[in-house]
Figure (cartoon, rainbow, N blue to C red):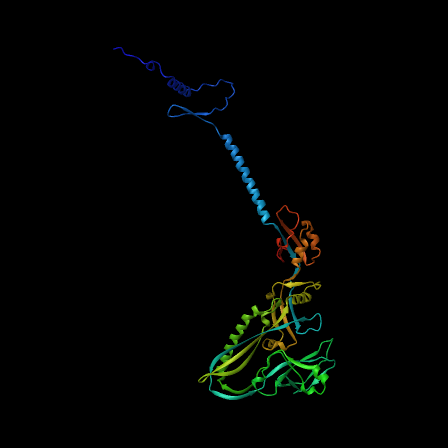
Length: 445
């Protein structure tokens, strides 16, 4: 049987031959002729396992374009963030350097409850009270009668002086009678105001009912025959009357009583000193060493068998000075060239205070018309200005107008401004966006 041949067995398929031809050409690339221009970059060829070829296009140019675009977007975002932050943080900071001096103070000063001259410094007396009790041993009781005493201010609302003798009677609205301890001469009215003088009185009878509270008005019964003079002369007590007693008191060992009183008084003293910073009115200045204490023993009461409860009252008094007044007073006395401008003292603790009379610290200073003391130290005296008014004057103005505005503020030596955003040339129109920053002494030197 004749064998039949298939044409495919004799002649290779075109596809296979083409594959071999391409493979041979890839293994032996043609040489470039000398002096010829480099051919443009061709796509990279890759032969797959199935014999086909894939072409990879070079994307280097596209990557460069993409990098430039990313960088541009990043810069835009950064710049936009800066602009947004500048807008959100918009405003102005005004750094002010006020005038200041640091005088050396070491002198004796006198202040008054009722100044009579413009160069005298006034003080007010702040009073705090506290009571406490403690149990002690008692050996019995004894009868005691004591008359209340107190200080009054006697006024005369008509011209001319009036002499009042010892034992002159004063009567309160309830008919209780008190008498003068010493004679006094009451001054007449001056410049439309009543004349006045302080004096001590005692109760006509013993008893606790004569322990008057503060704020009573007392008349002089002996002047009733002269209605005009009777209405012109009267007295008032700014402090309570104390000491009145009529009854049995416990007999207590003196040593034990003294020890218990001392411990109780120290406890009350600490209590009042702790209250002072929180109860002192705003805008006033006091000195720690100016505090004066007075103690009163109240009647003891029965606590149990052979025990008694002693009671003590502590009265704290301290002179207060208006902050602006004492600052100007010190500047007048110690700063050459000072001309009554508004000033402040930043820290009064640098000044040491001492009464001229050491006994003043244990006396009722409310009874003193004047107080003399020594101040020593180097206080920082700073000229003051109206920061709110300064902010108002700068609203909406050009930043170059700052020096011109400062001419109306002699208390300010110099100032500088920082406006946000940085490209703005005018101050904000809203006061809440202007902040005044004060720097004293350190950077202005």
